[in-house]
Figure 1 (cartoon, rainbow, N blue to C red):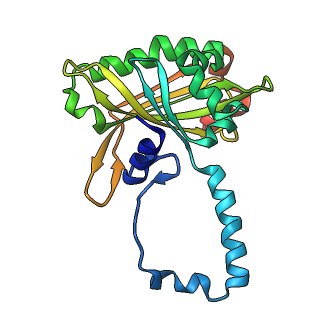
Figure 2 (cartoon, helix red, strand yellow; figure 1 turned 90 degrees about the vertical axis):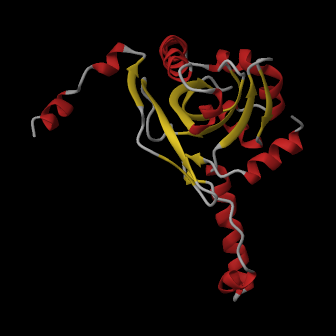
Length: 227
């Protein structure tokens, strides 16, 4: 899929993400009039808001499983790997795997992927796009430190016999909220209407720890649990 076509696809879709729901809406210019009454001040504020929020928008990608290649990615993927987008696109799945924290990769490959495949294999291929798969894990940056990433993905194309062929995903940096070895996996049904999309209560919820030390409660946590 050419880069510009993938970008058009993203603009046309309404998909759930870490920030809520991306809903493409059209407003009458009159509805926004109040934002521009004082242009000199308002425009500078809006520009500042945009620059701040743009950094918070999840990075998007499309992965072609048949070639183990990322055929599309947004520029803000750079914030996760501290390298140019082209590095990510050229490196494919092999690069992505190399960036995983080794212990998280073991859980991801032996538990998370197995759980996802076990769940999806019993569903008709036409229903695969009706589920949102979520999981967090740690990845290594170019500086050698780790960031905790929330991955959310949808199988957008599958073969007639139910084998996923391509996935459309989002990546969000959640390091400020979690940077331990706890891995949370969910599968959430997607409820769609012509105006909106939303996810419903997870049909699968698993919690794993890639490092045993994180399974031990601290004295303070034990004390809190008594109440």
